Image (cartoon, rainbow, N blue to C red):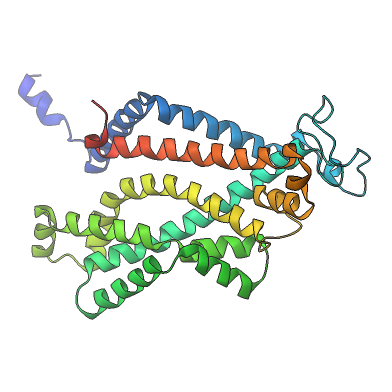
Length: 307
């Protein structure tokens, strides 16, 4: 068989396979760039450890050991081998409270951020794609949520709905999407100014085809980077709302631990082991998410990389 007939018998690879291989190569390239960022890898390692601790909290600290009706330890006991971080006002281990608090704080952080990201992405793409009255209305809504502090809106909404963990998630998610919407709108306008979008319009593409096929995949990398940074803000917001008494009193979170320390006078009595650990945990987790988010930004936007 001749060489020409061999090439003729070969069928070209489907376009879907070509795109899949290209995406896999791009993901591998992005991972190598991310792995080369020491601060980003440090933040990722810290997050993995904290997430594993939160997931396996029932195994590490059985819930029965935190039941105030079954605790026999001394109240506000200083750190010791039995209680490395001391005890609280009810004699419960502060280390156990800290581990269980990670579950609630991370759940709220992830859930509220996902909600705000979905809302912000949809509204941002719509505000950047459509024109006329629809765009004007969407821009005014975005401006309202940008001008009014999201924490004030969250406090108001939590007070109206009632105190619970779900209330905090909804309050944060519904009030903190405006920054994402503004970012996505700018990226949408930049994407739709490219030549291949003009060709799509010339071929008769619909609004939904342009948004779902071209705009959404193009804005997803920057949305992912912004989402990582927003989780830290959501955790801070949850801690603030819980500290103000707007969280579920039956759920242990880092913010509720700080509120309990304030209500029981731990700060004025000098019980530092009841105050510093939850505050330090919030700082570490937010810093870790920030490091990961900045590393993702440098991967997505090479101009941010250090020389």
